[in-house]
Amino acid sequence: MLDPSSFLYDQKAPVVLTVLSERVQDEAIIQDVSYASPQGGKVSGYLVVARESKPRAGLIFGHWGEGNRAEFVEEAVILTRLGFVSLCLDAPFRRPEEYEPQLAEPQQGDLQWIMDVRRGVDLLLEHFALSPDALGYVGHSYGATFGGAIAGIERRIKAYVLMAGWYSLSDLMRTSSHPLIERDRNETPPEEFQAYLTAMAPLDACHYIGNAAPAHLFFQFARNDDFVPVKDAERYFELASEPKKIAWYDNCGHELSAQARLDRAIFLCQQLGLAPPHQEILKLLESVPSLVPLAGWADE
Image 1 (cartoon, one colour):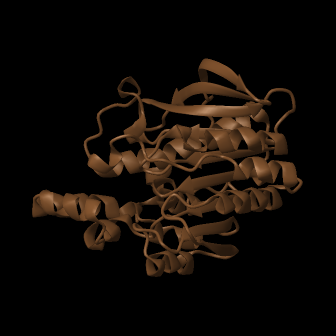
Image 2: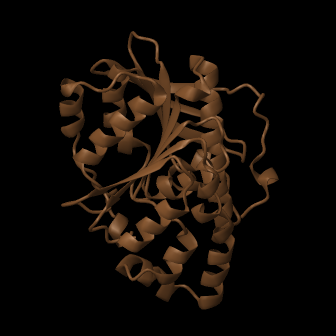
């Protein structure tokens, strides 16, 4: 676990939001944006907001390692109808090269993600005059793993949805039998691999998720996830502070399912003070295309 001072930055500094372009989709505006990272470089993302109505709650979305900031955009467009504004961010390893300074250690990129999300909270509060009681975080896989660390640090987020995440990424890399992880483990010199795990371990979610209260936590897992075994999913949930709940999904894998999308919309509305989604919204959410990993990811 890192010293709490590792996560400090100047919250009072103005957020300089740059809008690079925007497009209209249905009843929403999708803006291609960037803002300065407390760790250096620029954060790239999409800001998704209703064309006419003022947002009443805000969400920050963290994508899976197989994706990028585009993962949740279709979902975020629909959620604008419920009163949400959404900030869909690129993790440091998915940002344009000109946005990202060279990072010397693997831990620095993961710490940068946590700090960039915290700065995203500043952005939503400053630009949309939202209350911290109306802020949520949705993370998938990578976003859910480090979302556990964020939950133990960032007190201005009321509700977290953690989808198919790990309680300890360093343990996963050390013990997983998944072919891609085994390949990386076998192809990396032992000393280098151990140094990598040692650098990652202080940011493992297990050190932080027990301190998430009073935030509400919603864990979503697939029973047939090739990456996250049931026992590891249960362990993540066990380590978390109350209030919390867990949901399991069948007939899907690490990408999760349409039902998971409906369940988290209902949860977020409940926790952030918005009216529950009506049937039209639920049908739209259900129709969002299934996730597909970025081209070439499985061959990397």
